[in-house]
Structures are given as C-alpha cells and as structure tokens.
Image (tube, rainbow, N blue to C red; front, top):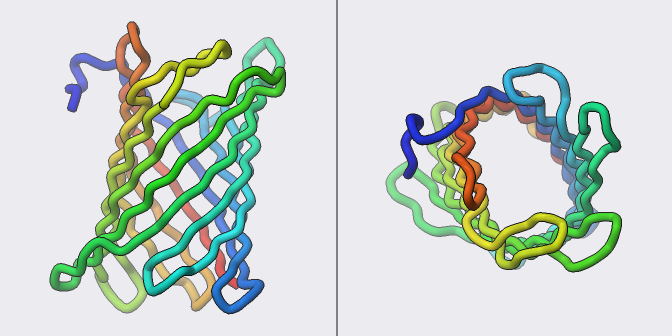
Length: 208
C-alpha cells in the first residue's frame, strides 16, 4: 500500500441516503443517492443517483442489477454526465466468534453521453461486522476497484482505487439506521501521483 508521503492528500465529505422496499418475498427495489464534496471544501462536487433490483438467492446470498446517473460539477464548464450499469453478487464468507464476514463482487459498465465505447470495471469488497450492542454494529471493509479496458474518453485499464472504511451503524428503528464512518481512499492514475483522500461519510438507510 502506498504511503502518504508518496501521495497528494485531501479531505472530503460524503452523504449517502439509501433505501430498499420489498416487492415480493425475495425481491426488493433499491435506491440510493450519494453526494460527494470537493477536495478540502463543503461544496458538492458530484452526485450519484442509482436505482436497482435485488434478488435474494439463499441466506446471505443475493444478486443485484443497478443503473446509476453520475453528475460531476465542473467549475466554469458544463457538468460531466456518466451512465453506469452494475451487476453485483453478495455472499457470506465466514463467522468467527461474533464477527460476521461477507463479500461482494461485481461488474460495472460506464458510458459517456457522447457515446463511444463502454468502460468496464470490476469491484470487490470484503466486510467484517461486529455487534457492539443490540442497536449498534461496527463495520470494517476494504474495497478494490479496477478498470478492465482503455477508452477514448479517458478510462485506463488497471487498479483504479482502494477504499478502507470503518463505520458504526446505529439502529434507530426496525426500518431506519444511521452510520457515521471514516474512509481512507487511494486513487491510482497511470503516470500521475496518487491521490490519498480522507473521507468523513454519513449514511442514512431505510428499509420498507
């Protein structure tokens, strides 16, 4: 893992609002909105709106299909829009004492409005959860994002980002939770210095 001395560093704030609603015994529709700040600022730099369908296969196993619209705000210029389609598989990994470990792997296709070729990415996450009380859980996770191809609009094949996260989720009710977290993100750009981001995130989740 690169050290901070070899990377440019910044601070960001993210707000995540997520919801899902059952439409059948094993099927749910999902939606989330992510707002990301500019580096070292409280101004919003990017919004990601996403909808999807999740199908439970067995205990701890599920597949999910999503569509996302990314709007990146450019100072003095036009917004940069991106379409994203995702396919994800979530699965249990292990139970060690009170620790529960699960994983998620998936593919993502990215397209700029001007058309052209699709940019393909793979995303993998490993998460460990530990109950702190009846109403609070500690969640530790590591996610790797890698691009699979080069595109004319700028995507380059190779490792794109790693995200290490520590969060505490508080259950406010049977259908509502809130989770403050810290994320340590490395952005890898071929031929450029690393970007090392320290991100304070607040996630609000609702289940219906």
